[in-house]
Length: 77
Image 1 (cartoon, rainbow, N blue to C red):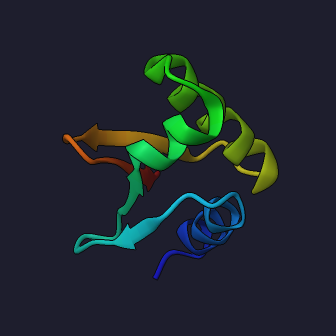
Image 2: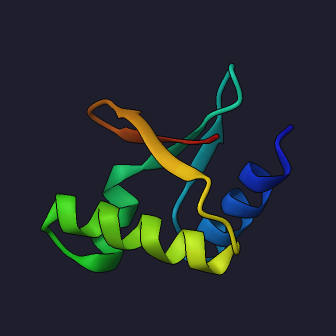
């Protein structure tokens, strides 16, 4: 498991955002939980969460890899 994704998973769960580990190593992050936390402007919410996650985990290696109806997929490079 990727240490950075482990840190991200812990950080997101502390905010009340549910996550699921998926095959390939990415982390599925609940879109609904993020919007409930920060508001209805999804693009701004996702950007803010990513910015704070990078700061909170002291790494700029995180990025959104994709999305579907329920989840954004967090990866790191």
